[in-house]
Length: 163
Image 1 (cartoon, rainbow, N blue to C red):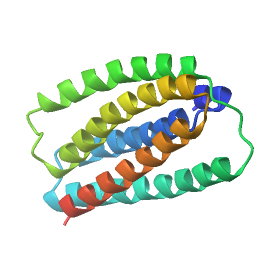
Image 2: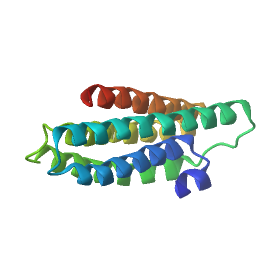
Image 3: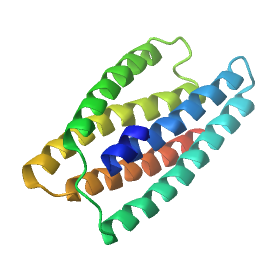
């Protein structure tokens, strides 16, 4: 979040909000371990609603920046931070896929979030390249919007799993 604010990158801010939600999901998923199916589904539902809330907040910020007078984001920070995040998310996804309980709703929710993160990281890297190439903040706002769309889609997938 700090690098997103400092670099004025909506893509990084969106990614950080998504990672906040992921951390929340991972944390509450621990409460489901060894619990009943009902408890696991309830936790997955809570995670889905939390993601939707963050996405709405993010959409509002994208609109504010689109209609406001925002400076060009720092493309190099966008790219460097996203490369490190991509490495971390790739490792997390690998670990999740090796899990023995990967078929349970709360673990599927975690894999959905992490898969989205990998896509988001690649998107922010591409947006950083385009910001530099086009000298425009629009690619950054577009990737921010795409991130929140992915978050909403993931939320609905998770809510479906929780039924």
